Image 1 (cartoon, rainbow, N blue to C red):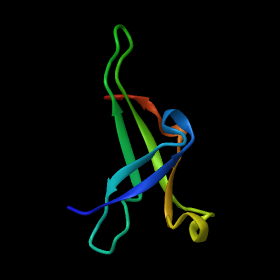
Image 2 (cartoon, rainbow, N blue to C red; image 1 turned 90 degrees about the vertical axis):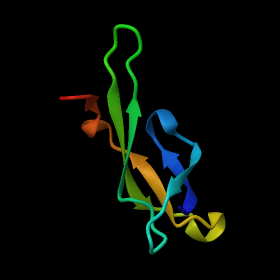
Image 3 (cartoon, rainbow, N blue to C red; image 1 turned 60 degrees about the vertical axis):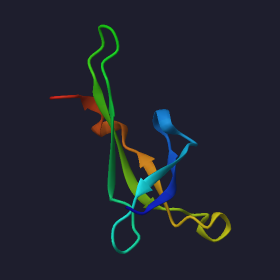
Image 4 (cartoon, helix red, strand yellow; image 1 turned 60 degrees about the horizontal axis):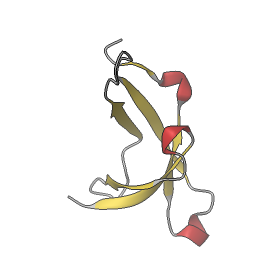
Length: 78
């Protein structure tokens, strides 16, 4: 499966560039969910990122980036 390096903006993954699988047209998924496992007494949860056009597309050669959606981050299973 083909992948593309995509930058993450905001949240715990801010500034990281991770490989994300792309579809047949070369676009990454519209939403990217990152499961966070439970740690001690804290329950596990999921971080939600939404695909957005990268405003620096011409300079960075990346067309997309993922922006953190804090209002949709909730404990897993709820």
